[in-house]
Every structure is written in C-alpha cells, then in structure tokens.
Amino acid sequence: KQEVTQIPAALSVPEGENLVLNCSFTDSAIYNLQWFRQDPGKGLTSLLLIQSSQREQTSGRLNASLDKSSGRSTLYIAASQPGDSATYLCAVPRSNTGKLIFGQGTTLQVKP
Amino acid sequence: DGGITQSPKYLFRKEGQNVTLSCEQNLNHDAMYWYRQDPGQGLRLIYYSQIVNDFQKGDIAEGYSVSREKKESFPLTVTSAQKNPTAFYLCASSIQGRSLYEQYFGPGTRLTVT
Figure 1 (cartoon, chains in turn brown, red):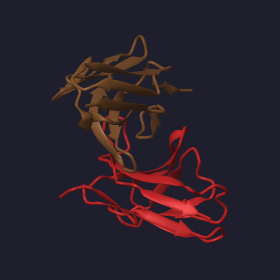
Figure 2 (cartoon, helix red, strand yellow; figure 1 turned 30 degrees about the vertical axis):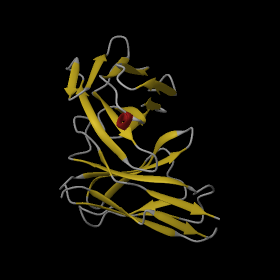
Figure 3 (cartoon, one colour; figure 1 turned 60 degrees about the horizontal axis):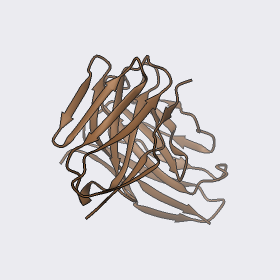
Figure 4 (spheres, chains in turn brown, purple; figure 1 turned 180 degrees about the horizontal axis):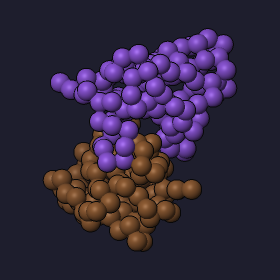
C-alpha cells in the first residue's frame, strides 16, 4: 500500500533563504508526482508535475526533483519570500488512475 | 477564464439534514474528483468520475452520494448518514482519469454541521 510522508510538518525560515521540502513514498512504481501549494482556507494550486521518466522540473524559483529508486522527491525554493508562506503538499497517483494519495503537507513560514 | 468553481464557500447545516455541494468546471476535463480535508489527516478521496454517467467510490464514500449527468458538473451530497460531516471539501478535475495528467482543484467548500 502506497504511503506518502512529508517531513517536517512545519518549517520557519528568514526571508531570502533557499530551502528544501521533502516528500517520500513507499512504493517506487509511481507514474508521476505532483506538488501543490495551499493557502489557509483555500483550494490547492498545482505547482509542478514530474513524470516518472523525468528527474526534475522547474518553474521560476521552484525546482522539484524525483528519485524513484530511493522513493523521494524534493521541492527546492530559491530566495524565499514572505509570499511563499503556505502549506505545500505532494501527491502520487494510485496505480494508473487519477486517484491521488497525499502527504500530510509541510507548512512553511517565511519571516520578513 | 477556465477553471473549477465550488459553491457555496461556506455552508452551515443542522444535523440530520442532507446538503449538496456544487462543483463546476469549464476545462473540458473528463475526470472529476471529490476530496475531504480534515486537520491532521490530509486529503482523502470520496468519489471520482472518469466519464459522464459513471462514478466510483473512493476511500471514504460512506454517507456521501454523487451524480455526473453533465461533463462539467459533479455535485456531492452529504447525507445524514455521514457521521462526521464537518470538513473542508475540495473538488478537482483532470483531462482523463489516468496518472499522466495533472489535477486541478477548486477553491473548496467549508461545511459545518451542528
């Protein structure tokens, strides 16, 4: 049974710092991995989708990597800003379906 | 603007009443999903639909029902049989119900039952 874990549950950093958020999964036979951002009381915003054949994806200051063999993905945020403060969730699909299995999320606070 | 809309944003109901949450998308996506989010438990799948007039139960379908009569609409009914309905409900869609495709989420509906 696939399980997705995100550690730490919360993270606080000063503005300008580069940071890494972690996501691990127990079954390496994934089709892809998706990173989301959620602001308090809001829906999820898709940040990056990495297909199983890819090693990384980049969007602006965000870079997501995928290592299937070790069951890990990281989301790298460069030059963090207070506006990056949110909860970040990773998710993988169950088998070859669209049913996502989510991690518990990492709540990030970037202090000015 | 293409996207997913959910209404209402906040919903209050008395225990024992059924309530229907709306989800509409204009992305021309075939697949739609309903998730429930509780503090400390992450998101859990309630129901999903890969095509019009077809839907399947997710992990926590008990006490919920759905319909998919139109491609763009996937309403969720929370029935009185749902023992703990207070939660944040999120609707999502993707091009198809396959793993290749990115999922997009609506803004959510917060349901409070007293």
